[in-house]
Amino acid sequence: MAIKIYIDQGHNPENPNAGAEGNGLREQDITYAVGQELAALLRGDGNFEVRLSRPTPATSLGNSNTTSLRARTTDANEWGADYFISIHTNASENPAASGSEAFAYSRQSEGFYLGEDILIGLADVTGLRNRGMQVRPGLYVLKKTSMPAVLVEIGFITNRGDASLMNTRPGLFAEGIYRGILKYFNL
Figure 1 (cartoon, one colour):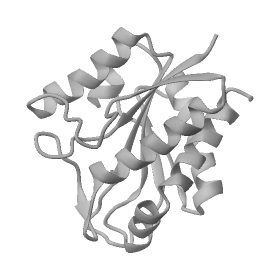
Figure 2 (figure 1 turned 90 degrees about the horizontal axis):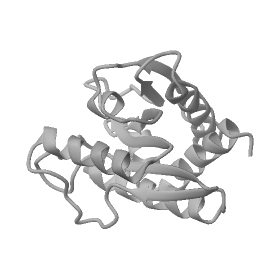
Figure 3 (figure 1 turned 180 degrees about the vertical axis):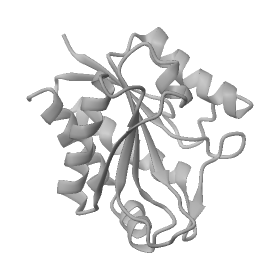
Figure 4 (figure 1 turned 90 degrees about the vertical axis):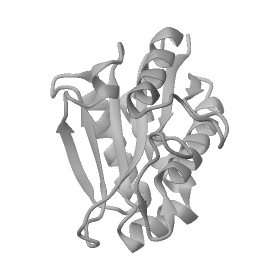
């Protein structure tokens, strides 16, 4: 039976719940592209079934930040996803901040272990620094999902190098996440 992976492409195309901006780029555009590329890799594998939170670039969920997040977690829960991966870009007032990091509900969760493997995959493929896993039980998408969940900050939109790589090579980030998923499942 296929492993059901819900890919949440963080943020909406416009407010409410639009994402960070930096270097002339928008988080929601990058997360959309990476999610589409990741879905294609997973669907081509045969071991996975995939659902995207934003199947089209214009898909907008909810009419506030809370209802947008609720729509994503409710969709994943009702679909019966086995794993939930939320893709985001990071932002910092320090333009030198760079690399990938991820968050899970708790250190002993499957989401935490999946995140560790995803970060290894991202570092191997993109060459960006692995900033490590952190525990964030207060994050809505980690708290309200009924399956293991990880929120991945793939790079810093406020860092010129990270932003350029995410914008021009979204497939690299998808490949990194995909390799992490394969590592996690020993596939």
